[in-house]
Image 1 (cartoon, one colour):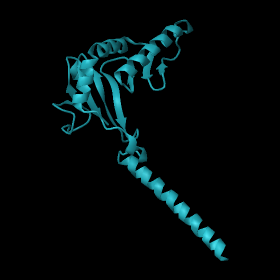
Image 2: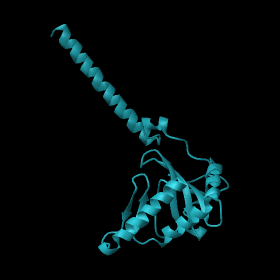
Image 3: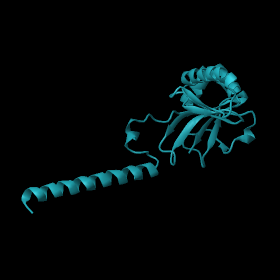
Image 4: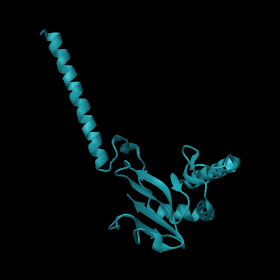
Length: 183
């Protein structure tokens, strides 16, 4: 084997080792909840005070949106970034225009309120504001709406910043509104 062949083989072996190491590190970071190398550009979770201030600024809009989502029967999930909604199957074609119009209203409301996504239907409602990590190890923060606090599946705390013994946890910010932190 000549010098060129050995150099080429060595370079190929080094490349394969580097690819394997990067793959292993990416998987480990994901398992640890860091979610890979993109975490360097991910904004931090909003604080309780930032979320409370935002809620107070848009309180009327939050309450209108909560009522719309509780009453919603056709739209299941709203994704404002994609400007679309997941809808119930087997909808009559005659109501599709109305469903599309409501979806557009939701998308506008979600963008105004800075929401990532939400399910509609039964309480409690979860309106996601920020998520970080992978689906198997993510942390989510948002607003929860319920008329019955017993429906919440976690503890209510004075602050969701570092005081939660177990997730999910909630901080009440108004009569039916909570900030939540969940994994």
